[in-house]
Each structure stands twice: as C-alpha cells, then as structure tokens.
Length: 249
Ligand code: FPP
Image 1 (cartoon, protein in one colour):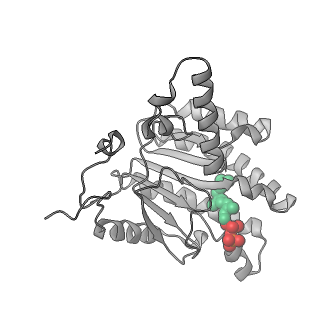
Image 2 (image 1 turned 180 degrees about the horizontal axis):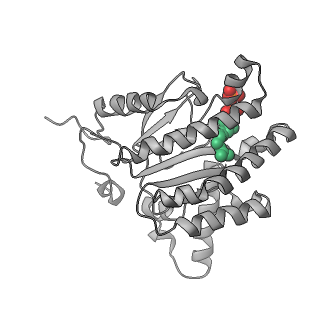
C-alpha cells in the first residue's frame, strides 16, 4: 500500500455526508419556461440558496457546503448576464453578511478571485474576515472557479517552493498537492449534487471528488427544496463507499 492510500478512510457504509458540494444548474431554463428574464432565474436561485443554508443548519451533521456559483467559463456568457450575476453577488453579500454571521456560518471563497472587480474582492474579504472564527457550517462559495486552473495554480505554488529550496520534488505527495489547492483545510466532498439534469462535473472539484458520491437530479435549481436535499442524502446513505477496497464481509 502506497503512502497516499493510508490517508483514505476504511471502506464503510457512509451514513450521513459531512461535506456536500452542489452544482446549482438550471436557473436559465427555469426562467425560460416562465417567460421571465434569466436574471429572474438567477435571483430565484439566490433565494433557494438562503433556504438551503437554513436546511443545512437544521441538519448539523453537514459541516461543509461547497457551492458552484460562477465558473471561469461563465465569463464567456453575454456581457449583460455576467454583469447581472456580478450585481447579484454584490447584493447577496451585502444583504446576507450579518445573517450569515449571526447564524455562525464560516464563509470561504474559492476561485481565481483576483479576476473579480475590486469592490467585489473587498466584499468577499470582509465577509470572510467577519465570519472566520465562526464554528458552525463552513460554506465555500466557488466564484470565478475552475478546477484545472486551481490545479495549475497549485503547481505554480509548489514550483515556487522548490525554487526557494523549501520543498524537494520527492516530497510531493497527493496530500501536498491537496494542501496547495484553494480547498486546502477542507475535507473532500462526500456527496456532490448537480441539479438541472446534466451529468457532468463542468470543471468543478476534479481533484477533490476522486471518491465523492454523485447525485444527479432533473430538478432545476430554483425548484430545489429541502425535501430534494433529503432525497439526495437518503440516496447517499444507501451507497457503499469502498475507496477501491473489496466489499467488507
Ligand atoms: C447555472 O444556471 C447557474 C449559474 C451560472 C449561477 C448560479 C447562481 C445562483 C444559484 C445564484 C446564487 C449565486 C450568487 C452569485 C449569490 P444556468 O444559467 O446555466 O441555467 P441553464 O443551464 O438552465 O441555462
């Protein structure tokens, strides 16, 4: 058994997921079917996000939630939609910061954050510092995030340490790479939910989801309810996670 395998937990029935990641997809189609603007769909999506945070707090076995809010590829959408999404983010952060803090939620932001407008970067940093000592649910919001770019950034960080003599190539293990990703200090997701019917990762948490259980639902994100969250958790609890080992007797 190689050293990386020692970090992998024993094969077991998973019980309940402590880390859930969500690809919140389907806002546009939700809007189209109602003949309203895509912005209305995203705005409804942000309301569902508030409900989701309450649902997670009411299920305290969930310790971590990682949300795909805006991908690096989303920058290629029409400029007005990108602007609408950025304004929604500004509005959400300013409106929700105090509530997130009161609810003991620790907010983290992952992605190529330097690509965001300076005022948004400041808002993210102020929400992060406001909530950094909270002990409840940890929410990682992926914004301007791409998993391949995250890995490239990690490689650059590692190479710089080698250049500086702080690390030798032979010391690079899977754990060292994990520790240089934006998600360092957060365990890998147990369960990844994608709404909207597509069954792919779309450049989200590629490294971190090596042994994650996937749950795909046709439900569009603005229609996602606490009962849908429970259905995903129930499905997860029926799975057997073997982490490459043999089924236990
Ligand atoms: C995908 O739906 C969703 C997004 C690109 C944005 C996700 C944002 C939210 C759920 C709102 C909360 C986020 C913030 C910024 C506070 P889509 O537009 O790709 O839907 P479609 O596949 O039906 O077109």
